[in-house]
Length: 402
Image 1 (cartoon, rainbow, N blue to C red):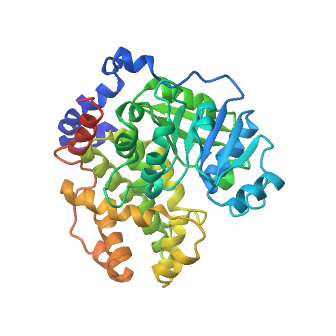
Image 2 (cartoon, rainbow, N blue to C red):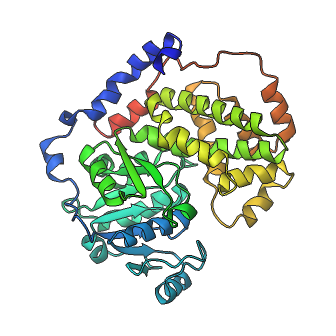
Image 3 (cartoon, one colour):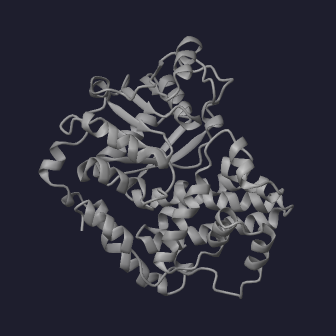
């Protein structure tokens, strides 16, 4: 694959190779850091607290409950908590599914220190825009010398700060917690996970031992995990693919067919890789499950909330009407704002993302956006940016890795 890219790729790869390789070297972790890694995980019957009882949090609760773990599912709505504990059904999401008896719903009060101290795993499945407030509230209740495994499955870019989840964790809980954080992403619809359909995901952390723990926690014959050491790339993949899913849905809603969808997915991947590399991620990450895998899934299925937003836009509905009636959060709408700021600051072309920003947040006519995209002058197909790694280096400095 690398031989197909133009010669500038070599210099770009060299540019990010230094910090990327340092992710994999154990020497950047001090002995003190090693001694305060998360508590050992039992082989089975881990105590897992999942924050967020939406589609994905609920399906992962069911998966882990069926795997023999003791799961606590935190929800903001008291009636959801009561209904779940009485009927083992979610009142709002995956409503027809009978959930594992190993799950106990808790809330709506935030989890207290006593409960958190008993947990082996904290799993965050809440929208990115609410994560900072949640972590700020929970941080005083975390014991730095007895931390549970911290797993994050949210996807998005914070609107006000344009920060990735990793930076939000560092800002609210400190660098050592951020270094231990583990991220799970990949092509994984909740409705298929609860049916035990074969699924694979990427699991990444700056700390290899933490990624291995998370992989072991989730891994089952129907749910395979592949570990990696590029959490920045995993995060960007999971966030950006939602923008291109809206674009692909809009193309379908406008009546375009298979050629157009293939074009949107392929060019979307090219833009994601360019943005990610300029940011400081490995371009190889975008060829994995969290990159092209999740992109293909969300761009080609009506089960995707972001695809659905785009499809309905293509059919002529207003964005306000769509969001009011969608029934769940489509992260791609807010992510487009953060993505636009990032590509502008990096000075790189990302025409699909730029046009989607104009359609979603400036009221641009979607037919005009399509015409302008197709009327762009010819350009090279595969090209990475001449410089790479600025934002990632800033983040690494915050984490003490540069």
